[in-house]
Structure formats: structure tokens, C-alpha cells
Image (tube, rainbow, N blue to C red; front, side):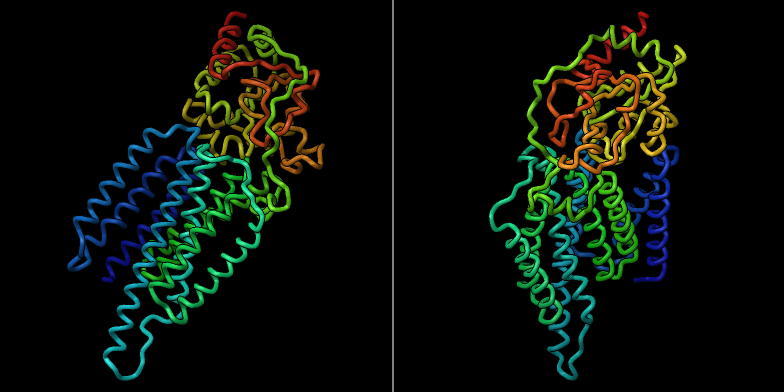
Amino acid sequence: MPTWVQVVYLICAVGFILALKGLSGPKTARRGNLIGAAAAVVGCALPFIYVDHLEHVPLILGAIAVGTAGGVFGARKVQMTQMPQMVALFNGVGGGAAALVALLELNHMLDVQAALDALGGPQVDAYGWFVYAATAFTIFVGSVSFAGSLITFAKLQELMTSRPVVFPGLPVAFGGLLLGGIVLSVLTVTSASIGIGIGLCLVGLLFGVLLVLPVGGADVPIVISLLNAFTGLTVAAGGYVLSNTLLLVGGTLVGASGTFLTLLMARAMGRSVANILFGALKGGSTLGAGVASDRPVRSAGPEDVAILLGYADRVIIVPGYGLAVAQAQHTLRELVDVLGERGTKVDYAIHPVAGRMPGHMNVLLAEAQVPYEQLVEMDHINGEFKNTDVVLVVGANDVVNPAAKTTPGAPIYGMPILNADEAKQVVFMKRSMRPGFAGIENELLFDPKTTLLFGDAKESLGKLLNAVKAL
């Protein structure tokens, strides 16, 4: 590889780092995205410039065209509520691509070694054991990421049950596949063959399926983040095998950020990563029965809730996944603007795992041009609830469920929550009495200071907005 190409790859790698830095703030996020995209385009275009006698160019260009068309179509058509599923698919195809490239590289390495051996003379190891080890790692973990990501997509898209799937002998099968992956990886280093590589890939696919099947409920997005870290590590290992600086740096960035995000999400859920992955094997899960309650609650119409909001000095909005489903963020923003004009101080309380993934609510509200200064993270706003006149919960449930603090046997026990129960009045906007994603009742719904406004969030917010304007 010419020196100038290595320098350009290094510049692209710096571009990835700057892109990640840009994504840390709303004012620089768009620029960061553009920098990262430009670096990726340059990195993909370089081989066409410096590689002599590049083979299969029409097939490569055709694949790029198909991938570009699919990516543009998907990005334009995907709903905000389906963003985690899209992330899972993108992550999965990344891991699968890394595994396929590693398989092809293993075949190439075996051909080179066979050619050297055919020359006779002293036996020469063309690559060394570490390259074979990195190749085996890429094949196995990339396959795990691909298969596991497809299962997470199916769970979130409701193509299969989102409940934990367990069966007798699952721990034994899981352990057997892990042991088989280790054995085949060692064989790849000591006596590599393409058959062993394919076997390692198949074991990785099965292991990925069994890794995600026992995961249920609100834990699925955390597993997506973990698999994203896996994909990053496989890309980094593939970059080492291919002697490609850009892949090495880019994969390391993804692996590190994915690992960090996984730990942050697990902490936000008040649980360990091991418990999230294997809790269902001993009967634990974040998905409860999910049966709608028939206990009596206090409900009201839009006009009554408008009076509560219109004459409040301090209001906190708690947005959730239901807001995204109803696509009601624009109406909510207009309601907040009207309340602001009446002199009411309004903020949005953002739980770390509001929606389905970190940042989900931030992006949703940014789409409605909500000022970023009004989005306040849980740690910074929890102390203000006790001085709040009204908390308006829109499409959220588990993130304000007191069971996380008061009920040791609850699936979400230990998860940090927004202290909405400390406010003077609480208004829940819900379609029905069905529980949240964790599948358990929220005792705050039955609190005497809680009022429920039933109906579709967008329609109810529209009526509420008109009622506030009429005050």
C-alpha cells in the first residue's frame, strides 16, 4: 500500500473521530454526520484508485449501487419509532460483512501458504498465528452479531414474540456452542482450512440466535448496543488482518462506544449486563404479564386537564415511546409554546432509556424543533419534581413507575426512574390501561393525585391544545 494511501486512510480515521465528537452535541451533530459520511466515501473510493488490476469491478459497483439505493430508501421511509430496528439491521449486516470478508481472506491466506509450501525449501509461515487468531475472532463474533441482530430486529418489529424464549437444555446448548466456537477458533490457528472457517461461521450464527432468544422486553435495545460493540470489534480485527488503518480505527471507535453505551444503558436499567443476557434462564425478565388492569382510576376530559395545565406555574413533560408511536411531538411542542406564553415554566424530563434507545426522545423532539435547552436529563431534573405543579406523562410508563423503588420483586426494581410521583399533580395520557413495556402495573396510575386522559396521544394533545387556548 503506497504511503500516500496510508496517509489518506489516517486522515479518514481522524474524520471518524471528529464525527463522533460532533455527535456529542445537537449544534454540531449534523456537521459530524457529514464529516463521518465523507470519510467513509473517501475510504471506499481509495481502492479503485491505488489497486492495480482490481478484479470484479462491475460486481463491486453493482453491489455499491444496490446498497446505496437500499440505504437511501430505508433512511427516508423508516419511522422514528422503528429507528432501533434499523440500527439493529445496520449493525447486523456490518457484522455479517466482516465475517464474510474474514472467510475470503482466510481462503486467500491458505492459497498463499500453499504456494509457498509448493516452492520447497525451509518452511515459512506467511502470516503468523496472531493473524489467524484475528481472522477466527472476526468470523465467529461477526456471525454472532449478524444472527443476534436479526433476532433483535424480529423482536422489536414484532415478527416474533418479544418475550424471553427459553427451552429445556438451552444452557447446555449455549455452553456447547461457545465451547465449539473456542475449539474451532483454536483449530483455525493451528491447522486452518476453509471447512473449519465455515464451521466456525455456522457455530457463530447459532450462538448469536441463542444469545438473544432469552432476552425480553426492555432489554432488547441494550443487546442491540452490545451487538453493535461486537461488530465494531470484528471490523477492528478485520482491519488488522487486512492491514487497513481505517478499518482498525473505525472498528475500535464503534467497539469502544458500543461497550460504553451498553454499560450506561444497563446502569440506567439498574441491572448488570450478565443479568440482562441470562436473567431469563433463572426466571428473571423485564417483561411481565402485560395484562390490562381493571382497577378503578380517576380520568378526566381535555377541558379539565387544560385547567390544571393552564393555571400551573411549573410543568414537566415526560415523553415516552407512545409519543413516538402517535407522532404527536409537533402538537406537544405547540402546547408547550402556548403554556410558555401564559407564563408557565415547562421542561421535558428525559430518561436515559426513554423510547427504545438512548437519544430516541431527543431526536424525536428535535424533529419538532423543540429547543434543546428544554430537554433536561433525569439526574438534573429529578430534584425539581417536588416543586412541580403538574407532570404530564405522554406515552411513558415504566420510567415513572414507583415499583422500581418500592417493589423488590418487580422486573424493573432498581432501575433509576423520574420522580414524577413527587409532583403535586400527575396527568397520564394513555390509550388504555395496558401496562408499559415491562408488562407490570404502575401504582402511580392509582394514586389520588393522578388523572388519566385516555385516547390517542396526537388526538388528545390536539384537544388539550384547543382547550388551553380557550382558557
